Length: 217
Image (tube, rainbow, N blue to C red):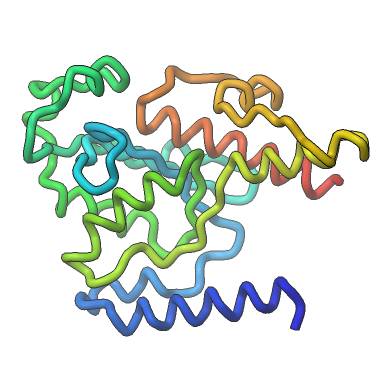
């Protein structure tokens, strides 16, 4: 069995186990086959970086179809946290407690997000953190985390830059994976960072560009 087939076999097994754990049959659509050539770029802003204790305060998502980023089909949600927002976090994402006072309850925000995503693969930068935050909130409700394929933009960028290195540099590659560097090196426009929708759109731009470059390689 090839490595690709093995990864697919393992992923399918994980999805089957997740589907068996699903407590809410209304969300079985998350496990459907994804629409061909469609993805959702996603980002969350939080009260901090502790995936066990901190909370989501905003969610941004945008759909990608082929090489088009459908900003008309976007999701931008504020979430009302159960506790206060630390000053250090406010300085990063600029969302104060009064800005979040009319935000959605977390479960309502998650329900809207799930219907927006459907079964589409997810794209993001530092996506592992966002997924950990979302999965922690989803498991007590659904019995499982998100089952969609996850595509990390920084990993795609690493592969792209690695292919450009001469053989002697590939032995000890030193590749800057910061988001600002990534966007600059790809010649992509930058939006104001640490805004969930802006970060999702920038991740979508990077994904489309890197996918195009990989197809040409």
